[in-house]
Amino acid sequence: MTGADLSFVLSADDVLMIAGDVVRRPNGVYWSPLTGREVRLGPSAVRLLAAFAVPTSAAVVAADLGVGPDAVVEGVRSLVGHGLLRDCAPPASPEVARRTGLFGMPVTDLAGALRGETSHGVVIGVPYDAGVTYRAGAKFAPEYLRRVSPGLFRSVVRDGRPTGMYDPVRGRRILDGIRLLDIGDLAGVAPRPGGPMLAALTDTVAAVVEAGRVPIVLGGDHSITMSVLDGITRAAEGIGVLHLDAHHDFGQVRTGSRDELHHGNFLDWALGDPAISFVAQVGVRQLTDEVGQAPGRLRCWPGRTALDLPVRDIIASLPPGLRWHVTIDVDVLDPSVLTSTGTLLPGGFGHLETVALLEGLCSGLDVLGVDVVELIAGPSDAPGIIVADILLRTLDAIFHRQKTHAPGFATALAVSERDGASQVADPDAAVPAPALDPAVPALGPAVPVVDPGAPALEPAVPALRRGSRSKVDTTVPEPSLGRVVPGSALPSVVSAPELEEVVPGLPPGQARTGPGDDTAGSRRVGEVDGS
Image 1 (cartoon, helix red, strand yellow):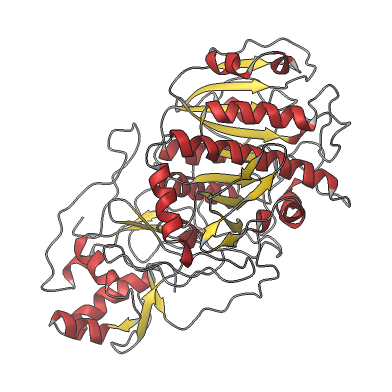
Image 2 (cartoon, one colour):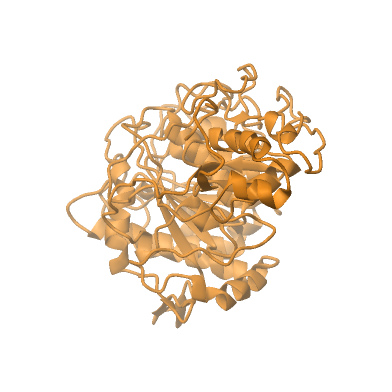
């Protein structure tokens, strides 16, 4: 059951479990990536939810607490009504056509990808090309890359440890010890400009970055990058954008409505966002009517000029201390190398030149995310293999740097290798859940967010507006309980004040206000315990 409908019949003997798609965030917030809804729980409600980490009934929980079952049933009713608990019978799901993701990675859901030390990077497919102005087809690229990439590199786990693959040119193993998981494509019926798929992308990227993983986004057209950046800036500060593209993708600094956003102007809004500290462009060679005035936060190395400089000189000219998102438009490549894109321009990079440049930059910059966009699938595997190799080398450089620079990464890597027996050795096998941490309730069995081989289905996620850095839509009044319907225009964060009072004997929580109190225009978000 989803939404806040509390009219259903619930027996004290019904066996329930924590919903498998629920992700726990800080401060008692629980998020469903399938619906985009969040519920803030107080300490008592968290304890009640945790009691169902192993499937059980309200009657059993009441007996353990020494209270009457009727009191527990009312609390459980609210948890079920808000989608946090469900019947323990396995939900019906479509047949999974293929159990492997990018580079043969295991396919799981977002909750499974973010558990414990399960992964270092999370692949997110975005089959969206509603933002193109010329030639469509980029929405098929995520599945295309998944299909052809295992012919280049295949993720294998041996003795509980990901081994990567040996590269005779570099004389070492690529992605050695790095755990990557693919959560499939964001769901959606025919994507429409600015639709729920982009809101879901922002939420998903934010969750991945907050969990300390690297989001690896497969587009899709270049307009999706703005939603990626929204998710990154929600979870981190001091963000720079490294933009590889044949086109400027910038006309003027804009804020507010994104009704006119498309793949050729997403930087208008990126440079209008104060959370984006700097944009570095490489490879731009588009002819224009006028020479625009670039803002001070943008620097461009046009055409092939970046190839004439030592990479260390480019890095030295960038602002220090930033964390970078890398966005790769495949039309940065010369048409003699790749023609499978919508807006070709001559004078671009070769494959090895692109690899060398990205390896150098990502080895010297603190990169926390990457996307690849504007690839159009075709009958030949060659374009997909070329793009997959560029992405592979970029990821290897990012994680190779993290091994040696990022605080705590080596420790996390050692922990993941120690606990690696819980990982998938066979890419076609299911992803088992790790051992339960008593401090964090289990999230239930992993259910794939989407079958990578299935048609795209649009999630019921309320569209998010970007009026401020708060993701709560400040223009919509606070909804009352029982009227929030997934997919409506209502805010995605709701409160459930009845949960605290219906569990006698549990310690009372303290009223808190939600995030955003120091952000202009944001509103307070109530929590479950008496807010």
